Length: 162
Image (cartoon, rainbow, N blue to C red; front, side):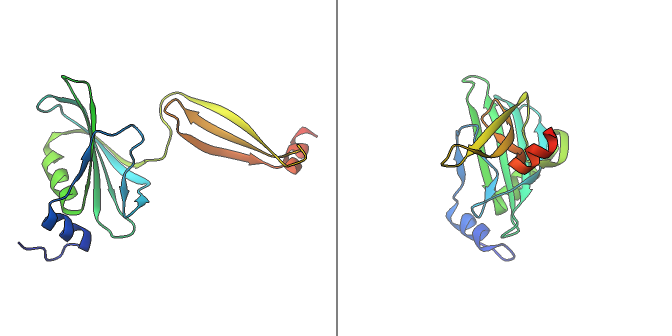
């Protein structure tokens, strides 16, 4: 077996034949080397062999430089959504295989961005005396994801009201 030119992780995966595949929750992220990949390319794919709503999220690891791909698809019969995470050589293979089935491509998608309906939440941070020391404003979506929008200190609050 030739593994020349591959990273250590890709060599190990090629030799052992290990893949991280499972039917997981909506909280799955595009991860490699225990680091979340923040910017990725999103492909919407054509339906294929009993699967619909097919997507492929493609990114590059900052640590090892390998490709990472997250394939998302829903089974037509059971309605179950499958999340398949590939790294290294396996990711390159799946990207090459799905290249002919892509319908739409969105480059430079932030993987931590919120989508769908978004609402705002204000959280007051208090000290032991019960005084408000900070107000944090979050944007949330109905999937449970949240993103910090703004932090206000008491000095900033008095300047704005006066």
